[in-house]
Image (cartoon, rainbow, N blue to C red; front, side, top):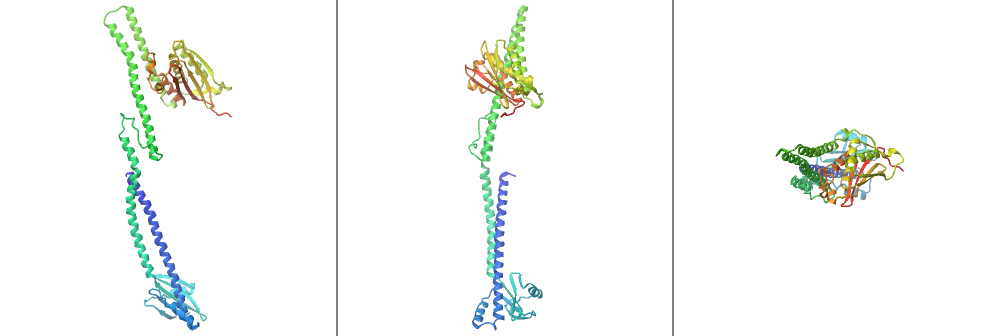
Length: 461
């Protein structure tokens, strides 16, 4: 069942129940008021009959004339009966034949007053004391005028209910269409978006209602998808280029070497060149495997307690092996009194790869005599490692893409590398529930900040 149909049915059902309760309540309380009001009028007729019939010889002529006038103000189809204490009928008036069952007189004798209904006829019986004797007066009548009004009210409510029901159904259809129209517009816009135009965005994201929230959420999803697709295209393009370059060099060297017979030292030169290209391919393959390992589930990676300062010193030693000319200064921004403040939970091999990659990048892009500074800062819940160089830096648009695998800025194309170091470091840091940020200015240097959660991270007063 469509939501539009469901909303219409729910709206109609709720309004129908409310309207039905209203109509039934109006009719019920109107009928109850009419019945009680008419019982009161019949009761007055019973007392008027008693005064006129039984008190005629005990009151003055003027009072009797007044009782007579009240008595002759009869109700529609009125029947009155007067019985003595022996339940003998002493007075009756009325054209309708109303049978009084003996048990009614017996109940009247016991209770002192009775009220009964016989179809549309209502009856009231009272006890009346006359000259020391109990008499029983019964008056009955039919409220023809008000019964007709009640019937008219019933017809009016019944007709109005069904007319209102039809109006509610039509309004419910219009209401459901109006309510779902923004959603249908969102669906229509979403259906037009495909992989070739992920730059499009939904137009319903400017308001504060649920539809706008849905559109904003979907636009955020499109932002992530567009970024992922762009990263994928960049990855494929750059990876193809990086893999093709050493393979092309190997093939070219072999083709040239096989064109004619050469001296042994020439073959040795060719083999050395091929070995260097093969080593580049091996490094590239290892980098890709390490990226896969860094992308795995953290629950499958063995974690141990590590000291960040010892890890940094070890990474500096590894980085010097790769960049012999680099110089690294390691300092503490705020040296903690407790060595436990420097503990982190992580995989030593992976964190060592990430730190070495950051240090090596800083050295490669800092000229012939790279000077690198590394600073460790202790926060209440985290540890910060800042690696700063004074190298060529990057443009703002390149900084936004440094974590895209195989991406390389235009000003570093002539420097050897594959564009894997920082993306690999980011995945490793994220695996350890940390973060990495890059701040750079062209021709002024770059600062990389690594943030890792402390093993015993607590706020101190």
